[in-house]
Amino acid sequence: MSQVSMQQLQEYAADSNGKVSTPRKGEMFIEIDQAHIMGFISHVVNDLRIRLLSTITGLDLGQNFGIIYNFSHEDQKIQVKTTLPKNQPTTVSIVEIVPGAILYEMEIHDLFGITFTGNPWINLKLLLPDNWPADLPPPLLKSSKPAEIRKRLHLEVERKNE
Amino acid sequence: MSDESKRREESAGLMEYSVENLVPFGPIHPALKEPEYFKLILEGEKIVQVIPRIGYVHRGLEKAAEQRPWMQNMYMFERTCGICSFVHSLCYGQAVEELTVFQVPRRAKFIRLIVAELERIHSHLLWVGLMGHWAGFETLFMWVWNDRELVLDIVEAISGNRVHKSMNTLCGVRRDMPEGMEDRIVERMKYIVDRAHYYREIIDTEETMLARTEKVGNKISQETAQKLCAVGPMARFVGLRQDVRLNDPYAAYDEVPFDLVTRTEGDVRSLLRLRLDELIVSANMISYAVKHLPDGPFRVRIPNIIPAGEHSSHCEAPRGEIFYYVKSNGGKIPDRVKSRQPTMANIPAALELLKGQNLADLPMVLTAIDPCFGCMDRMSFFDTESHRQWAWSGEQLRQYGIKHYFPDRISAAPALKIGEAH
Image (tube, rainbow over all chains, first blue to last red; front, side, top):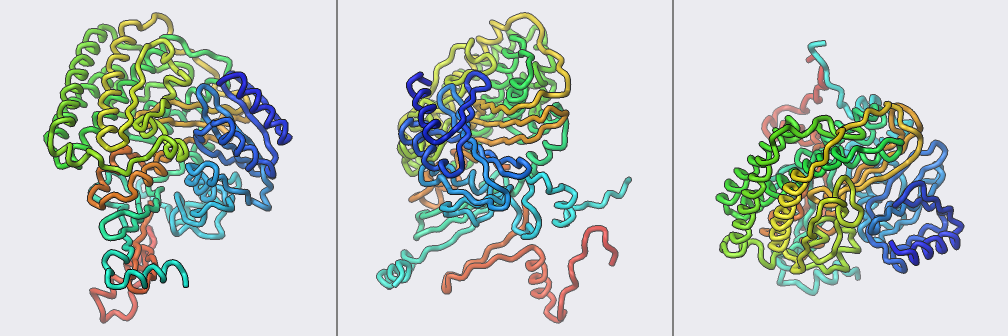
């Protein structure tokens, strides 16, 4: 990635009160406040032409949820990080800017229970079974235990030879 | 008046063209290798919209990874896919290795390249065979899968396994290259290249293949492919120069010369040509890497505690970019592992490719993206007259079946849980 666009990326991050860190060569973490995320990603995609969104990663950080937008551009991996409180797990969808993000947002909605406003398919299930109980916490939360999921979904299999 | 009812009124008398039909495709369907469900909305014979529902073989690997040691996870993630297994462990391994202070030996990097490229050849051959099968050209299927066996023999000689190679380990590979393999590999690769040239001739001249592949698939532009974040062959077949091996070299890709193959036609046949060309490139890379294999150690032993930090890694799998994100708390097990497979990234582009196509072309177009999905019960009903839609669970379906065949029974007995006595 050229020096110019790297500088511009840092300028955009500074405009949005972002923290930039480069722990190792070829990788860049940019922490952005949730309110500025739409504007910043719009700069990244439309102005800097960083088009390939590899995926969106959800994280359970205890009190908060973390969301990482993983962009790949030439030999750089640009990771835009944001956090949102667990008691209000709603954020804005980036489908308008990056149409390819639609399934990644659905996946996070299934596995973490985060809602993305503006995603047309957000209420359709993508990964979880249709009989997933509404009161069961989403599976990738640290509080969700595999034994509990198996019990509630009647997936326990009797082991006869034990 | 809503758009829907207005449109229906305008097209009165042309009912068969105006009514949108919903065709459930899958989860179990002869044209699919694996269970996946697509809700197809048709107008006449043309596909208008496709809504995917994946996850039928979702096994919760990301959750399972949070309860297993770092090394075990490597072999678990290898089981993500039964075709491109090696590249998953490679990508996960690279993400973890970056968190440690250890370096992968140069010889291990070359061995990783050789196995990864052998895997690409076997995956592409498998796919070309399947395309022949769906096009109704069984001979091609038989020929190609016979050649694939030659590649699998080499994989078995190197790693001891045909599909799940279990070759990788953290900071190295588990086995050295066997001695005296060089000539055998070079000879076989030469044969594979000859065969690939022959198959290219077939797909350019054989009428069955031409009819089923030429100008099939809604042509997508470079702009659309970029917008939908298509990866791998799905990006390269519209002319995008997108390949992790070239853009961000890993393993020994910076030391082995290769050409990037791109095409511009944007139909199913260009995908066939592209993959056959890639196969030739891969075969040449393997021959080069075997001849220039450096001496030295092939693995470094590392402690089973990984320092705290987070890192992501991407590799070029046969189907496109594969992505792993790893977060460590400094313990024996990972805090979070995220894996993204190329098929997931390519679904939005595949849905675009399907729009406006005939229903009959669906298997060809869907197979063209080389889907590999990673389930539950569901039956969908759609009343075309009232546009009412509902779904039954397995239990409701069971009750319906019992009532249908035994109408005298007032109520069917409740389902027995496994392990419950009568």
